[in-house]
Image 1 (cartoon, rainbow, N blue to C red):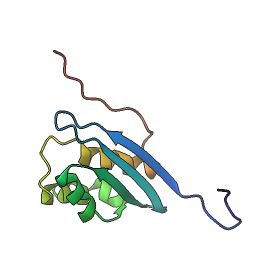
Image 2 (tube, one colour):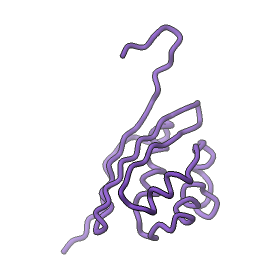
Image 3 (cartoon, one colour):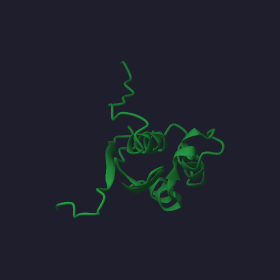
Image 4 (cartoon, helix red, strand yellow):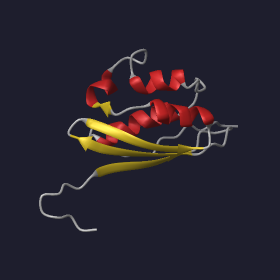
Length: 114
């Protein structure tokens, strides 16, 4: 679809996160709504992540610089009873940073050597 005169192209970022042993792959789509605001579409079969997605509102740039104890992403994860080591909340932060132009989209990995 072509951009019409006066229309702004919506900027977005897509991530697929494989969180490990639970096997509940998560799809995160972050949209830059305004100059400093991001909204999310999050899909997962995990009940906790579904709750997190329902509880999570738009995130503004200043939210990304709050400590964990006041960050709305991590507060929503706590309220949704996400496992402490779940990588999804951190992935949501990374998606927001990239959507806002604060970070580059670079692959992130945690690999156990056996």
